[in-house]
Length: 362
View: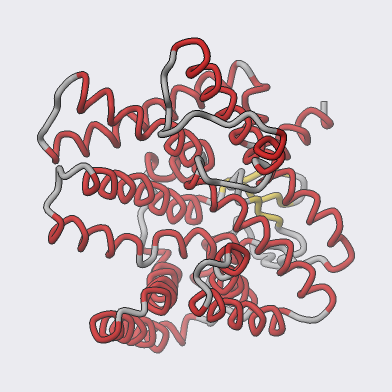
């Protein structure tokens, strides 16, 4: 059995028969729902790096970590952790040109509904905190104009971390349309052009969101045109080469986007090549399976947790502060997961499409 067979629970590897839902981390085969533990592992590693990287960034801003050390750690993590999410999503994406409309609707429900819920819930929380208690959850008083209410449908100004949900949604919609009415090669060419347009016009939000489509398409193509066991050594050499090129180019000219592309692809490919050697770590798998909950909870509570630890409990040691910041956020996310198992409507906030399916199946 080849190394990519590890991603499946059977010999049939046809994309159209084995649908993998990124938000749920499951494989549907012959009517049975099975876990995809190797993908959960990779997703779990990526989400933990997201939380850790944002913690490093926050402590750098507050002066708890020396810049020469902190920035190197931060840059190393940001070279590949978000590209991994997009490549995983592309890898598990299903091509079905006859059902493109239903797939697009599914993506809107899966990614846009949670964004809308969080966007308006956080705006209401800011408004209540200011009106009733005089507390500013962010700098500035929350606006209540009609334009502000409408713009929250797409503006991430006070939920900057939520860009990922909108970006992945747009990338999936554009890719599905290009793949349906042209081909995946056309999609790759288009996203490659957008990638460079985002570098040339960094202020254009649409280009920035869609520039991540290059990673998504690479993940899709890796799955579709996967190599066999005999090519493993050649692929490994290629990946090391790509990583070396990325580091050299980063040192020479600072093309951050190019570095992320090269290093992100290298890390993803190396993991894929040696996936059979990766042990199943239950904690990492659980984090990967519930990565959407971890991501959303982390984005909402990180600064508040920091404020409590640093300002109320007066913790000033950077290593202890960073460790507690990570642990507390994970514990809060795990508590919500536990509660949502009993109060099932809470799952709609994080996994709306799965929740609707479960309700319809009853």
